[in-house]
Length: 306
Image (tube, rainbow, N blue to C red; front, side, top):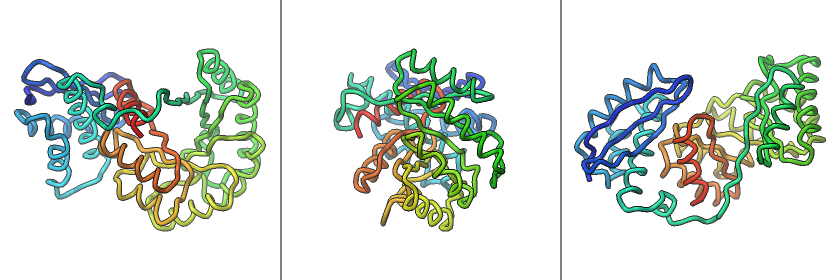
């Protein structure tokens, strides 16, 4: 089975899909990061031209050629294009053999996959209502981004605003699981002020407590926070490569939860390999999945097999 045609489909505001059609008429789908569509679409189209006529069974060879055959590597534009291509190739391969992708990865290790919903709102009351609605729909965990446009060194008033939002959501959802995402907005010092104040809310994790710039200084700061604080910390959505994840996990972990984005790190196989690193480091894996249905389907395959 070979790739006969490829096309890029944008579904505003945030979905950017890749459609591969094989020589026998099967269709495989992948998804790139839609936030970067103006830059990613040309990269995807150029990549599609290069893989036309290629045998789909060489998934790893194709993706390595796309990555290692370039002088510039590991930028978000190239990585997300490769990730979408890799997802679509796995989808085609599964259809070729008549099996879900997680079976091709070794089979499921669990029958159910835990999920959570990210809540949106402009004030504590709206966040609380969003959390209650999520539980009414059957979800058992939610995540809230309470910091808004908070400065890197928030004032007492800004800190209280974060606490008010978290408190409102906690009251609305009762004993359901709750996590928060700070989007890397705080300095390490500001995180040290905030994190102890969040302990009464029984959080599953706090995501990106400080800016993940990839430097050795960030890794040092994050590990210190991880060791000092009682609340589990999470990061990973902006990391680009398995090497970067390895730096966060070895020789000792800097967080308790790792969140690879399959539309950024190289696709499905990279997600499984990062999951294996997490297992070795005794760190939880929680694929980052804020975009469309193809990314969700790919993330479920990785979660089922990891």
